[in-house]
Image (cartoon, rainbow, N blue to C red):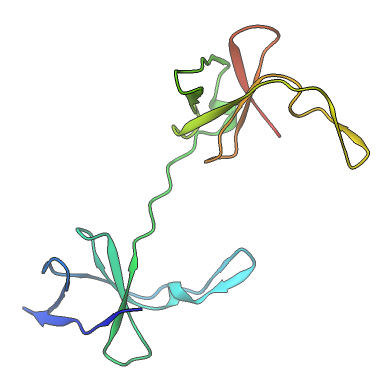
Length: 151
């Protein structure tokens, strides 16, 4: 943890990395994330868009710690808006996810397996799985068309 002391220039704090002015963002309300209180959102921060970092003061000491800016989440299509479509594996064995645009893995059909004393039918037929948006696209009746499916 490398703490820095921010300097002011023309009534605004300056980024210690690039020298650009920092944008001030006021503190927000305390939010619940994964069942726990997220206190980080309740603290003000200084943001440098160029360096993709933000600075947060440590215990009103005048010293600031830097953190990487979170990547903005891509907008997902609603599952009802995704029509059946033809999906093909490319040279790397993957395809582009119609829901989020990331790369999906192709899962070849496997024999039925017993999991916890019950047959696991999830991987019996060929399908695509997207690790980014947790979508599954299953083949439609021996065609090259795939439809979004619940896991």
